[in-house]
Structures are given as structure tokens and as C-alpha cells.
Length: 464
View 1 (cartoon, rainbow, N blue to C red):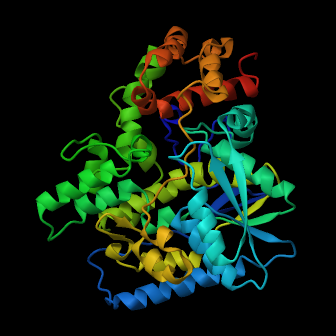
View 2 (spheres, one colour):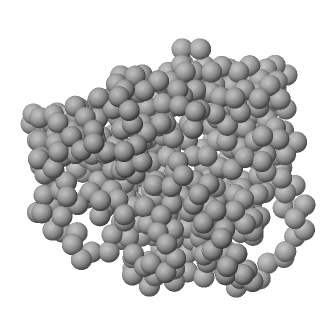
């Protein structure tokens, strides 16, 4: 059930008896058995730990130096190196820095969606021009997403909340077809710099000493209104509502990242058999996030935003972003994705950087903006975070929406042992009657169910 709402207990997979290696660990297998040992971990300082406050310009200069070196060393290769380029500050900063280390134009590959709210092509093209890069747009349609959905899901071996992973699958294929084997990507920036809106919500709710409560409330409302596309996936909850007593007891606050997962569980209840839900009744579902986390050593006494960053970096980052959205979609086409933002020197510098250098009001990644301002366009410098998402799958009449409805009505859906088959089938009919807003509000739920069914079918469980 944790899998079904988009949470995964650390190191677990969809496959019985198969576990993933925890981040920052190595495994040795020999005649004495199997040993898993930790060699590195994130170490945010305690709020009571004495530290020397540096002038802002020194933090900015130090971060620029660390990130620039991380980009430089990742350009080393005996094959051509390209860049994935969206309209976000992460990939734009990487491209801008990489271009300064190259004597020839670097190739920058950008996905272009046939939906204005999700297409960042114009912003990316402007950035490529500033960097002197060779810009390569890759058009993506709902039809191409539908045609490649099952194959991408097979390589990802995980449930999804959006078809953005299929877009990355197609992007990687286009890069391979262009003759490239290595690309620089912007993944990891949000996890070390507090880029997602729920981190900004935590900053406003829990790291707001000295701020006027009315102003905090206004900024939270502004944050929600400016994130209408990603709100259902990344933002949720309201002040004063406690969903997880376990988090409140162990952490002293409830990270905003948890609310969308909890809300999704409640929405999906009707589609699961009572016997499948029974083991989870009365259980604090936040345990899926906290299981295996050394709360006392790594979280207690840290700034709330740093606690949220740590939790996300131990769960969603390795188990979804770097796998389903990253390495597995790239390696499906033998592409090596290199991630400068996850360089250990970059991470260790940012541990020591105050929270207000990462998030300033409702502006995320403040230190990145200032450190790379000279290599960014004004458009990118001033732009708010837009998470990488593909257009809503349930909207309109497209091949993607037809795939969803057909899957929900399929025999494979009825064969999933923990689904209420009739309820799942009725959802397909209900989608036809919903408004665009209503479909959008449950889009992530539908995608979790569809990916469950298709994985069930693709790996032969339905016929086993």
C-alpha cells in the first residue's frame, strides 16, 4: 500500500526478495556473507552548533567555486558530452558553466510539449543562445507518450504519478540517436537547495522567527497560487492540521512534503479491497518515510527545512527521481547521466550554508541564482521553480487518455488482487463526466493505478 500512494519504505522494491542498496553505502559479498556498510551521509549542523556567519558574498563565491568544479570534472570524457536543458535554473546553470569550459559549442537537448503550460522551449532556446550552445528541440506529444508508456515503465520498474518519466525515456533515446553517450543533468538541485514548494512552505511555517504572522499567511497563499500545476503532487495541507502524530512526536513538526501523500491515500481507499487496507488501518503512514532514518543523530536539533531536505534526499530522491526519472530512463538507451549538483563537495558546502541562503521568502535556490547570475538569462534568473512534468494524462481526448481508460477497463485491472475491480472500471466512466479541474485533481491517483496495472501485466503476474 505504501507503494500505491507513492511512498516506498527505504531500500524496498516492487520485487519480492530484491532490495536496493541504501544511499552512501557499499556492499561486499564474499565467503563470509554479505555486508552493507555506510561510507558517507548528509550531516546538517545542529541549530545550537556554534558557527561563523560569513558575509553573503562569501557563501555565494564559495558555492560558485564548488559547483563550477563539479561541472568541469564531469565534462571529462573520451566521447562527446551534451546537456539536458529545460527552462529551469538547474539545467540552465549547468549549461552556462559547462559552456565556459568548452571551446566548441555544447549540444543542449530540450523536450518540447504540445501544451503551453508545460512547454519550456522558448526559455531553453534563449538560454542556449546565451551560452553559445547548439540547441536541439525534441518534440513530445501525448501520442508518443502513450506509445512508449509501457516500455518506459518496464525499464523503470516503479509506479509513477505522471508520464514525465516517459518523456525522459524519449529524450534519452533522441540523445542516443544523435550519437551521444554522456549528458550533464540538473537533477539533485532541488534536494540540496530547497527548490520544491513544500520546502518553501516549511521555511515559512517553521523557520519564520521574527516574521509577521499575517505576512507568513499571505506568502503561503501566494506560494499555493503560484504552483497551480504541481500543487497536487508537491504541496498540500493547511496550517494547524496534523496528519501524522508520529512525525510531530519525532521531529517536532510535520513536513509539508507529507500532506500530498496522505491525501492521496484517502482518495484511493475506494479502489482497494478491505483485506488489502486492513494492515494499514490505525497505522501512521509516515512510518514509510521514517523507517530506517536515524532521527536522533540526523534530524533532531536541525532546522526544520534541513530535516525536510534530509528526509526527501533519503527517500524520494533515490527511489523515484534518480531512478524512474533519471538513471533507468537514461540507461534504457545506454546514456550516462552526470549530476553536478550531487557532487559531494557541493553537498558538503551547502550543509554549512544557512537556510536563508537557500530559501529567501518565497524565492527558492537563492544562492544558486546569485552564484550563476552571470551565465543565466534574465528570464531564467527571475523565474520561479517549475517542476519537470508532462501535461495531464486524463485531459481531453488523446491517445494517452484513451490508454488510461482502456487500462482501467481491462482484464489486467481486474486481475490485480488488491484492487476493487468494479470501482477501478467505474473510474474510467467517471473520467468522461468530470470537469478538467476534477480530472486534474486526481491525475496522480489515476497514474498510480494505471502504472500498477501495466506493471502487473508487463511482468506476467496477470497470467501467472
